[in-house]
Length: 113
Image: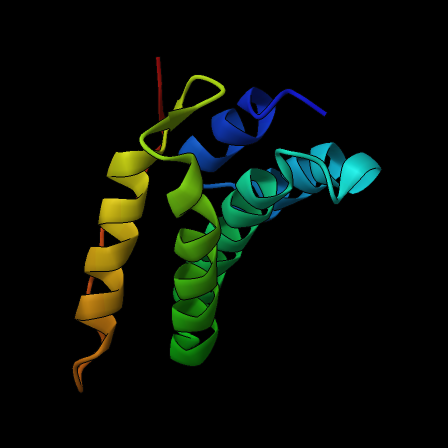
């Protein structure tokens, strides 16, 4: 359980379901290990992006909020993954989603060291 990079490659191509699956593959063998929240956060941020694409406001907001919450303890960088910009982007999306209209968002990419 130590390779977030395949999921990042998929995520950055906009393949959120596939990224979710790749990270879940890394997370499942040791759900209580030291990286559990890291993978859970990435999985949920990807799920939030998928919900956003499907115009499911409630799903996007719920997954982004919980995903960012799981990632915060690992900031700013964990396993070579720059989490601070990702969490900052998600926080901005949550703010944008609080309005009445549907916001047109540029979904994030994940940077690595």
